[in-house]
Image 1 (cartoon, rainbow, N blue to C red):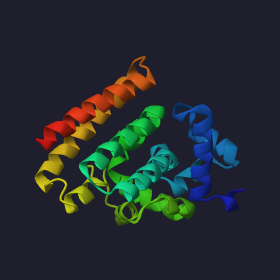
Image 2: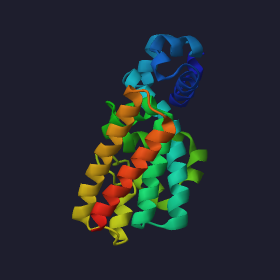
Image 3: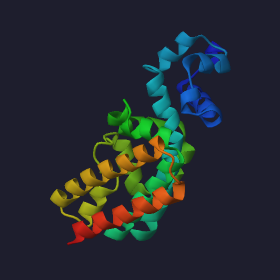
Image 4: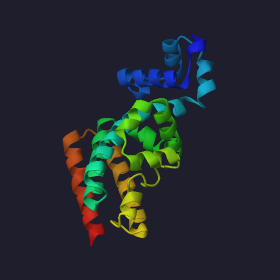
Length: 211
């Protein structure tokens, strides 16, 4: 079995365990048992469990990117389209809060671009779901979750926001969304109500930046 091991197969195995047992049900021992290999084999392909989890969680992030790609391919990079992209993000994040908190704010958040680029190279069928702009940013492998330049940079190029305003807007939205996901994950909240509250706050932020 060891001769058949690969990064891709470990990612697929971890994704299957996360889907069935949740992110907190994933362990090195459980992966090794499922892959019929030694626990040490995993460290040949990944730095640690957190790195493997980051790659496995990309499946959920790729679903979000596919929806965002469809949106911006259809509507461009206006302020209205950018606001809608955040609604799409929050819909995905609230449906999988543990996964998005770990991926976007976890120990490998600063390497999101590199991880995303590697992921799409291993799973090329998912590249077809990306529009050309978003694909270009991902394959630069410089994207970090501390900024929001995946889409926002195109809003700047389009003249929707100045670079200074865009930087502040990205900062505000990143922290606002993080707080919403954290609150939803920490308290008993209705999914639909939390999405409504996020949408209300999001709209007020965009109104403020439009003034």
